Structures are given as structure tokens and as C-alpha cells.
Amino acid sequence: MTRHVIARAGEIAPGERRLVELDGRRIGVFNLAGEYFALLDRCPHQGGPMCRGHQVGFVTAARPGEYVRSREGELVKCPWHGWMFDIRTGQSWCGPERLSVRRFEVSVEPGAALVEGPFVAETYPVSVEDDYVVVQA
Image (cartoon, rainbow, N blue to C red; front, side, top):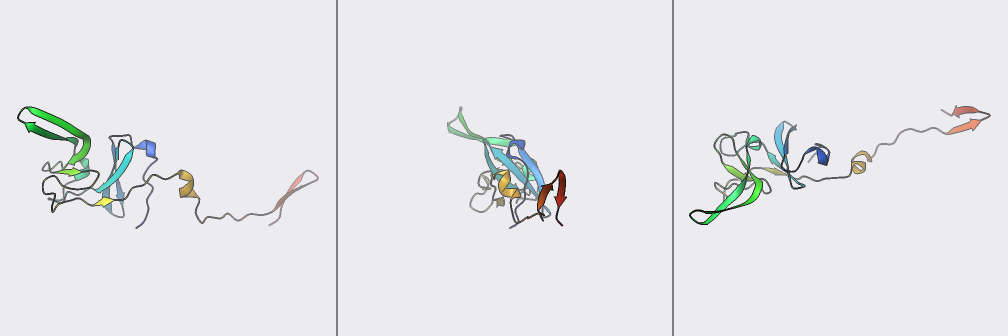
């Protein structure tokens, strides 16, 4: 797979996302408290722009009237029909045994590691002779 530089880590704030197009596919890159995750921006239900939906949390209830919120902002709801997907895993909450959205690996790497590489500039010896700078080419 091809690696793509999306942004500086600080440019996608915690709780935010960035939508990008890579190799003809729209992908959402999410920052969940400093961890980054990427999902295909296509809901498997009917192809909606899933990564543009609201980020929500998980709500459970031990009994009526007692609600517990957790994992705030870690689920994304498709804006077309409200189907929810776990941003960390891509797993659906509507049909977890058979539905998920495609995930992409994300890493945060030092800038120097990205620009080092096989690039070598052609160099020439330089000397100073009686106040003249001389380049041998």
C-alpha cells in the first residue's frame, strides 16, 4: 500500500477529523484523544458519506431512567440513516457480525523520517583561495 502524508499531527485537534481523497477514495482521519484512525467515507448500508456524520458516544442503561454515557466521540453516525460505526475498529453497531466499514492503518511519524529517504544532492568540492570562492564542477 502507498503511504500518504495527510497533515501535521497538531493540525487535526482531538475530537476532530479531516476528510481527504487518496487514490480516488474519500477517507476520514479522526483524532480520538491523540490516537488517529482512518475510515473509508462510505457507509456499507447504502453508500452514504459516513465520515461526515456526527461523532457520538455510547449510551447504556441498567434500567429505565438510568443512562450511562461512555466513549464520547468514538462512534460516527451515517448522516443518511443514522447507522453507527466504531471509529477505532470500523465495526457496526447495527449488525456487528456482518457489517463494518473499511479501516486504514494510521501512524504518526517524525518529519525527519519522511524527508530522509534515498534523495542525494549532487555536491562539488568548494575551497577558498586568496579570498575567492571556487567551486569545482
